Amino acid sequence: MEIQGHTAVVTGGASGLGAATAAALVGAGARVAIIDLKPAENSGLLSIAADVGDGPSLEAAFARVAEGLGPARILVCCAGIATPGRAVGRDGPLALDRFVQVVRVNLIGTFNAVRLAAAAMQKLAPVSPDGERGVIVNTASVAAFDGQIGQPAYAASKGGVAALTLPLAREFAGFGIRVVTIAPGIFSTPMLQGLPTEVQQALAADVPFPKRLGQPKEFAALALHAVTNTMLNGEVVRLDGGIRLAPK
Image 1 (cartoon, rainbow, N blue to C red):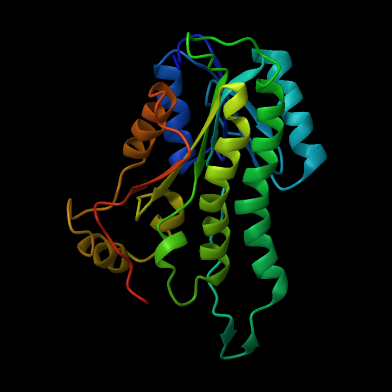
Image 2 (cartoon, rainbow, N blue to C red):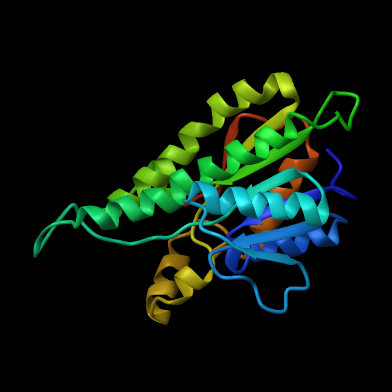
């Protein structure tokens, strides 16, 4: 689907992968709205504060997008958190609310955005000879497949996002709406930049090629390709330099 002139929503668009994707979409001619827990400052875009895991909050955000920019034909879900913790640590079992919060943001938040965006897309007129109405790009992680010790919540939430891909693509196919998921490896984002420099360097050294951290613009490039390549549907694409995470 063409990007030029269409409305796009990027959740988690205030920083990291989401911010890079929002900028790339603007560069490709889209009207872009960012939805994040905290509104982006000086972005020059429509920035809406909302909780992706809360139904009414996100419904209100999508209504504001439609009113301000028109109904979205492109959705990129980048909102996510990572709270490490073993199922059973030195102090006993992991606090259940810590597990629930990660799943709430990463998995439930993704589904919440998808259900709202797809419901609106289904009512739009097709924009291509193939009958395409919209595209949804979700963000999983290599942790969905190579989950490490201390990542049960994160791996489970991202595994759920990966597992959503095919059933959603099958459900929405009759409406001309595609669903693609990107599973990034180790990327230089604010989440990772909070780690000590030596830890970041060690992580980069584990990437087969290129031996460095991924850059958000590389994620954004793949997200835009997913939007424009109509044959890409129902697939989870690893973007990881060939890395396979060790147990810990």
